[in-house]
Image (cartoon, rainbow over all chains, first blue to last red; front, side, top):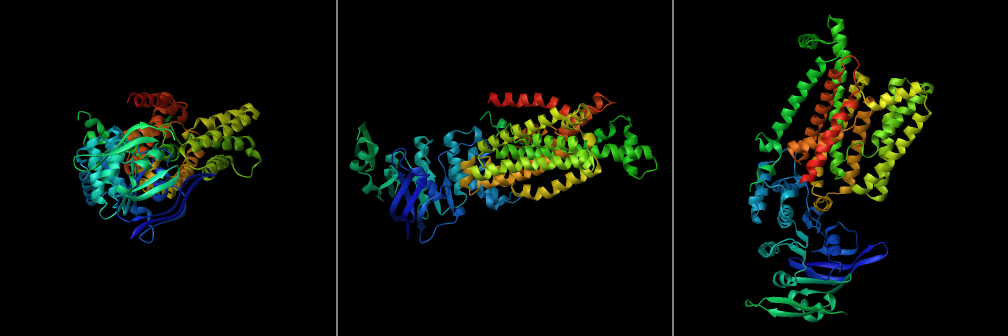
Length: 248
Length: 347
């Protein structure tokens, strides 16, 4: 029961964007994908989501889920359409929508919005919502598809601290029976919420494994070119602090 | 929360729903179509028109029947059909190009139609077919050629909005130049014919053109209806639409073919009628929102409303010599275009 990548390669013309020789992680749980800018995080997530072509194999419990069982949220999510948040979430059921929108469709939309504490925004226009609000509505849109795999490219990038925690708690709950892959820049958030971490640098896999094993100052310092320290907060959680930049 | 009211489409704000707005627009269209039947050089009063409509095309009063059923009726129906077609094609174009200033003409389709028509007007006497069928056929063929050029670029270089617009502008300039070349070569009398065709006029409408236009609409309609949710999803942006499992490039290419067929049908019989395809989608969207289930019918109806209204105005301004409707829509369209640009900029 695992997520396995073998000889997983993405090329853009003659340039190699990503190469992972072998990776083997559990098939459920929250996996954080970390790494400095340009490490290949978005490339890996896009290739897993099926929007970027790749070579090599990917398998989840033996095969790979159909496209409609994969919920992918890209990094550039901004919506400029003047449609309501509820209609936006409704589009998550695109394949199943008929000419008439049924009461069941509406009920599922309301449930998906409520699950992310978005009921108050239901009738608001998407193009008038803040970046963080849009991000949460679009997350609700992906969740209404009941995906086996949820792939999120920086799902907390536009969120305030309260909503970062709220979304990650929600993702953790979802991850009990499905695979959630999320690119995260905030290593402290990754340390607290991820079960496993995939650490990329320069298009290569540095290490993949349980969170506590991956997040060590030695490996972080080299890839991020920082002088880092891992502190422990009052609840025993890890806090990653970067003291200063260093040049390799 | 003070902006909650303005957060909803005009239809919802006034509390009669999107379907209600579409019905109201349809009622307005029918009123305008009756007004169009009543106006004309013959100056028939309303009760004569109503009597003529009741009596049918084979009525005893031949003068009334001919004017109503053979002259005015095809023009009125053609105005509605062409306006509806251009409105629907315009909304689809604005959605796939993600550009509020796009219209069926953005990709050079009208210039191509003009070139095809000019070609036959200039050299048609050598052809074995009659002028009245040769000109629309050539315009239709040229429009599809322009669409094929854009489609080929989209096929091999990717169907991003930028690439489509770039290819379209290249096609636009190509056919405009060719058309100018023909105009330059033409004798003055022929030149006048070409220019009159380019104006866009409903005087060329006949029951044949009404039938052809209806067939094109009926044939394309199932394919359009199949894409309503995909088009609405595309409004979320390429990245979001693609992550919902939608192949956005394939969708753009499919819709491009539909727009080409609709535009070719509309312009080949009436000439290039501008602005309807640009304005109608904006009015439609403002009234019923982004949901293409309502947006497409609304854009179609508003297109018909604009064109039928232009026809009525044209006949009212100069009862003797009917001004080509293409001229009226352009003059009425420019202030509307400016208003859209200004309102968009204010946000």
